[in-house]
Amino acid sequence: TAFLNPFQFEITFECLQELEEDLEWKVVYVGSAESSEHDQVLDEILVGPVPVGINKFVLQAEPPDPRRIPPNDIIGVTVVLVTCAYREREFVRIGYYVNNEYSGEYDEETGPPKPIELGKVTRMILADKPRVTRFPIPWNGQE
Image (cartoon, rainbow, N blue to C red):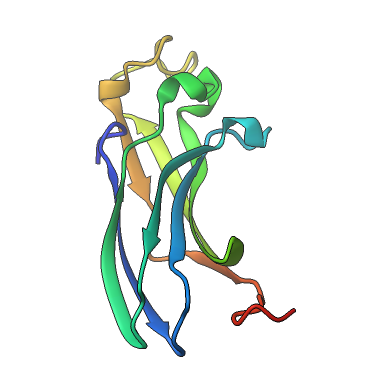
């Protein structure tokens, strides 16, 4: 898809017990491996009340602001994170590798033209190989 298209994730999760508060879902684009100052929260939503059982929804987020990404980091591999927190405590983080490629013609020796024409940048998410990290948290307020 085009770099400037929105991200869209179909989220399916199982809730094992009644929750007193909403879940906070976030989509974060890692703008540079060098520094987290280039990370961008693309969307942040509260989901609730969450019924016990299997839950499903679509989380759509705007693309990252290219002005906040170092020019040399627009093309290449990066990461987009989908996180979920309960009572401001993150309990799951799903990371997807994202490969941004320049689809226009350019000289292999010098690379794509600068400044990069964003309309010629395509984004491919390696959706079949997410990296899932879980964090233990107190669900009912007890540490």
